[in-house]
Length: 222
Image (cartoon, rainbow, N blue to C red; front, side, top):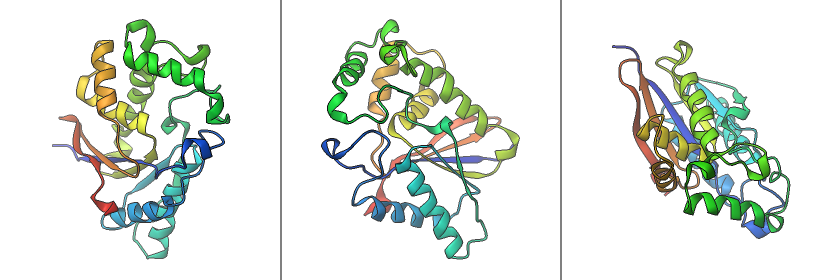
């Protein structure tokens, strides 16, 4: 049997309240550093071979705290942080960088998809830019799962610092396969939202494919 690859997707620590944010690409909140150190402590027990992060600040901060703690504590594993847009939040160019007070149209678009998950709606893009929810599910999540199925990661442990919608879609894709109905896709996606600072672990073997090992683990925060 082939070696087991372990991929852990970490949702970044909590961000400030919406009214305090200047835009979605913000650092985590006042209590975020504490949670980031607790996340790092969890990984010190069994350090990853690779650390990866989205391009967003709140994910990068937590990833670098783990990297620095591994180095300062003399771990045999000292991976650097690989930053990739592959792990970004769902792409929404007209949202990033704008205050939340100016995003009513965006939230109306998103809520319409959640409450009316038709084929047309899940394939729509906000003002025809960025990704649709179907793009995220069908294309980018597929690329992520294919990436970690490659031989160079076989038998390794990977920590990926990323975002709630991406993590929920990873679990949804593993649960439902490639061609769910729009209703089933969005129902499962909404049910799968992980908590801030949660640890969400999946395994891959060539024979068995992808398996959910431990989802939305938060005991390390207590």
